[in-house]
Image (cartoon, rainbow, N blue to C red):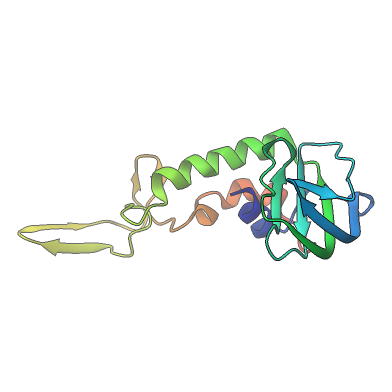
Length: 149
């Protein structure tokens, strides 16, 4: 989820001095040559199998490969990581196919039953008009948005 959120806001919480470009190899769940991570998160770009944001302690780099790209050392603030958890919880609760928040129907009837939901109504704390986590959390994500990478 962190990869999708960072891509949406165009912010990987990395600075030019923390971006290492070159030829890398993923083997045994680690990056070769070794990268000195001063934080828990990093992003890989240019890889065919391991692109995205990773947590150092999770060691989810299972697809071995060689690639020419870059590794960005990330420093996301604690408040942003808490927001990511909130988005993950929202997505788990409201992001399913049968979710009322993601339903494309504003009214429907079948078997003698019918309902109509208004565009501005709320249900269980989620805005029914919000069709995605991007819409539901737009105001909180705006604090972290960048115009470009």
